[in-house]
Length: 405
Image (tube, rainbow, N blue to C red; front, side, top):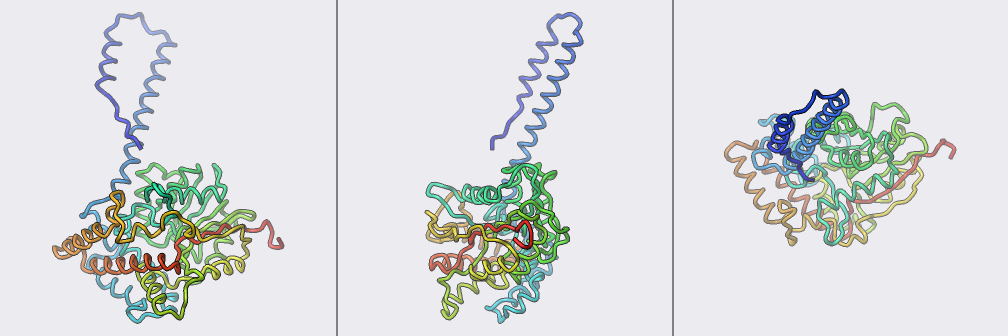
């Protein structure tokens, strides 16, 4: 997006020339025209300022080392970060954790996860924390935007629609979809740090009138029945301990006859629960991404039907993607446009975090967070290569006009 810079010297010079010319007293028409011209110039200046503001989130999303260090731990007290990391790790298989414990304590586990990792995500990935199928010649950033626009088009969003983003992160997709579709989007998120960050990015982007956040658990939302014209979730409802319960709550707050679309993290039909290597990959993804479990695609579909939805269509969008979705995490791949995600970039980040922690600029435990994120990256790449895991199982579902339909 271009930055428009006001040439104040030229404007001042033009103003002096106008005032130096002898002229009769201005007529009322000329006075009104001059006032209108001044108002147009003031509006242009306000627009230029908005353009400058819109550019700032990108710079903040690609923040430097000190920005990363200051955000590590989110709302957790810096002295408590190491303890939070240890508690989080104990939920998972590698540290003796059990699936049922993760499900029973999903709120605590997921909140700790996002307090610990959000700064890393924004540092390496930007404002939209998700994958996307990708065309040859397309950058990661372009593919992510297209993936978000695809959802908006599938939902048939129109100006004036009231939309819900379930598990919205810091609001990257929310802002993009609101601008793309001229809709009002509410993001629901149970993590206070991400909401605080998202509100700041909304303000900077100038979308605070059409985009807002609500702190709540998407398993028990406070919205009245039939509130929203459309609902979507991008790689978020995988954090739910129970797919049916989550979808049923989404069904409740969606207006009859309207649509719910999502990208789900799932194990595919190629996953073998009796294969130890497959189980190791699944466990790496779970610890590195704050998941109580990873469901099969068929389980998601069945939960949708049980919740009352009609399935319009569904597909694993990873299948047939010209470039693999996991390419940004593949250590054999190099890209200048997403340098921080490459093996070299990750090596630099790892050592930078180690150094920041050593000198006390980053809280103790930061390196441990980096370690389990690295473990997740390895699991995601292997899961993608073996085609046993997908982060983009897409479905479009409709709430019937009546319960009898």
